[in-house]
Length: 537
Image (cartoon, rainbow, N blue to C red; front, side, top):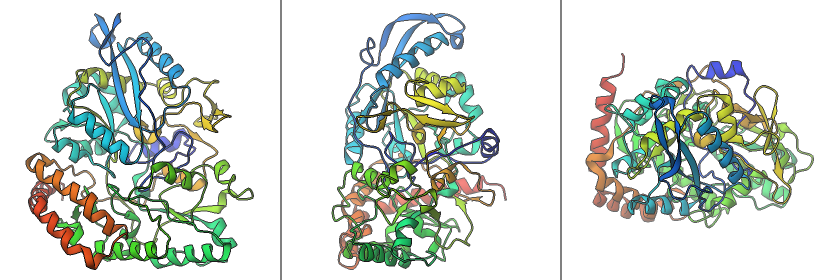
């Protein structure tokens, strides 16, 4: 999920029509915007002198509040990942500049383990009404609709209107539509990449060439053939870097179907190009995907522990290029060189299956920062985000740290992270895919060209009609929760090939029906019909 060199002219082009997504610049551990990306584990951190996220003393005049003296409020931003070594120093620099700029907010971050631990821990925080303010939502894992339906999010439309002018300036209206329902705004989207890149595959051409596999890869069967040839000829045991659990469908295969374009939301709602909503698990496309994964699993091309594998293991595979292919985009050339010392940038290539089919942007807000329903400081959360996007200086400070200490600028929009020699990790970096913006993003020139495609406008891409559709599950709150639980326990093992489709699908479908999937899909259809009625002919 990585970033590339972006020049001002490119940013201006992208700002006209791109969408946001998941994946991103990690804490130095590679790239990829595909399923199952992440960046390690972490621990809770509290800023010195701020205590818990409540008023923390001190006051300064705030231009946003008419110049009146305001108490400084500490807010907590909860995110997945590992705390960088220099975050405490960067935090204090950020908080100092916030006050200098008249924003009476102190920011602290709490890092939570990736993988299942992230989902479990954020759910626990929400269910116990823990005191925190902002957290990150990845729509390709647990979606915004899921959280909104549980009543876990605040509507921040008023706060954005009053305190978020910069947010409206740097995030296109088309992206906002992905977090807005009936006038309610449920989050601030991260507008950081060209979402038409979704569904791409990175191939390790370096290994393919060494194994003598030179045919262009254009079908899913060739992916398996290529992996088998590499493992056989080179004496390797490489697997596909992915995980199961709550991770959604593999969008790399959608282009191989006659029914394309279509999209799958919340892991269960298949939205067809004709506007019909179906049960994804009942479709022929699901069955064929599951058959492919089953074949790969039986051939030992998928980790036998795919349902429980730690995100750190996936990150390691991607970072060091330990794959024949991966879903999404790769990381840094310097990292893959540690595995293959003589590899060049050309050794990793970004491809699509059925490349002649049209390119679509399927979703316009894949990564979103939201205000927790229990937050006592929604206005301050919005003020912080508005400050972040107010200038390049603010963005650089929060995202990359202290110039000369944690990073150096390289050209107009380049970046060189300063590494910790003990861990070979950046001393500090905040993942752009979580909270980045194309108007400000800097990209390390060390990233592979296959990664830099994230930042190039796809002039041939089309917006799928449902890209801006946002499902509100409030009317099927209990059913949606039950359906998602069945997906994780019964459907994901079938989809990822761990268990046989024919032997298990009937039971899984029965459990989905008992959980209330018919009611969920009926509500999906109702809302999609209403959404379509608002579209221009």
